[in-house]
Length: 209
Image 1 (cartoon, one colour):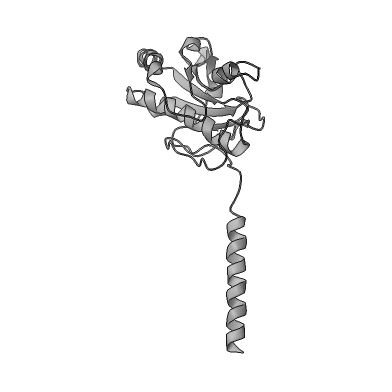
Image 2: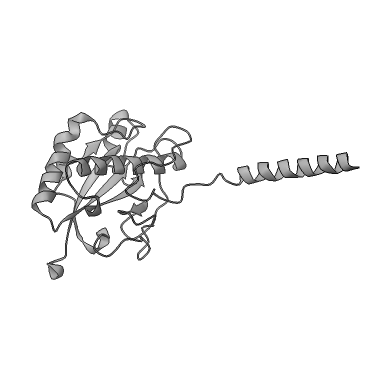
């Protein structure tokens, strides 16, 4: 009797452990809190979309040392002086300095060092300005994988800026997946143009200067 009861308890325990493990598989809820630069990347290789949101745009907004937020107004977790929605966003200033990535990669290639240096030099000379870095992907792969991939791309660019002396407190990141393609076409050339890190200059509103 004791042996049978022990066996039953053992089987029940094993079943609970297996059930708990299965329940741990969930979709990522957002970006890794900055300034951490790592994120789970398990899953199929590829480029993936995010679910459309609102506020700044689709995707999830991450800020320096603030934990994870979303792009829904009032829920980013960012202080007012870091939230990009409290700044005038200039997408043209660094339009020619966009950083492009290889398929399924988030490392910044040496050929873009000059682009990043120009951005860093401007920020050093204009200390009232902050920066938003957008991570973009092409439309291949799974949602879970590409959410992390877009994040890693934005964070990789941010890390390069920080290595040039720019405080991480001045740089916010957001991942858009495929929601904002630069080119709408299913060709390798289009894919290459959509795998990118985009700089958006954040200027304080005139009333706050």
